[in-house]
Amino acid sequence: MSELQIIGLSARVAGREMEWFFAQWLGRYPPGDVAIAEVDSEARDGRFVHRVRVVKKGAVEPIVLWARDDDGQEVRLRWEGDAAEHVYAFESGASLDVVHV
Image 1 (tube, rainbow, N blue to C red):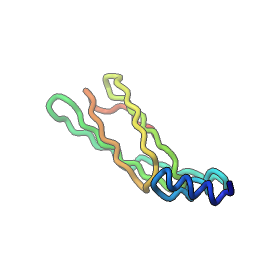
Image 2: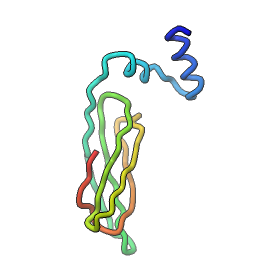
Image 3: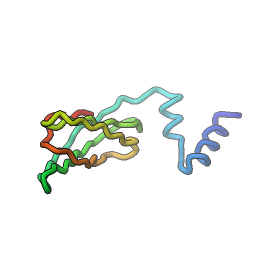
């Protein structure tokens, strides 16, 4: 199979265009640029609802958010990184202590 045939087959299997994937995989890997743009927490019925907005430039790649609340509860959430920004939403029993991407 040629490279173009592999790209075409992968697009049919995935149900979406896949040239971006092969450009990253076979070409020079672009630098990533990911930042936490906003963190919002709201107390609700004895729990905390958290929203963390992440913005990114560059490569399409999974982004994992890691957070720990003041009670030590940890959460890891994954986003495919296929857009310019994403909002992670989750609950915990306390306010947030640390958030990383």
